Image (tube, rainbow, N blue to C red; front, side, top):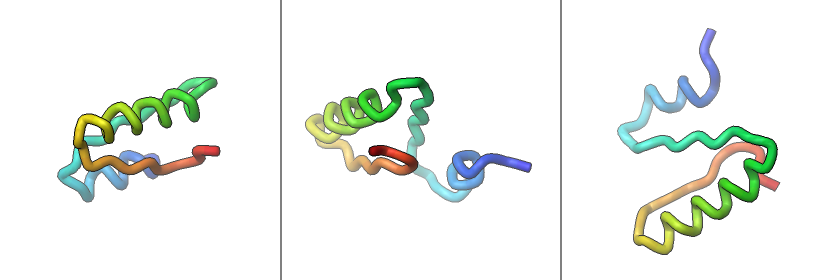
Length: 49
């Protein structure tokens, strides 16, 4: 049995950054905007409210 993240990572050549913590939504959004502002092609997946 594997997690959804592990399954998805086996089917992409993209770099995956996984953030897990109590305030993950804030950290995830900050990371997204920082990478996007530097010109990276980024996407967010998961439970981001």
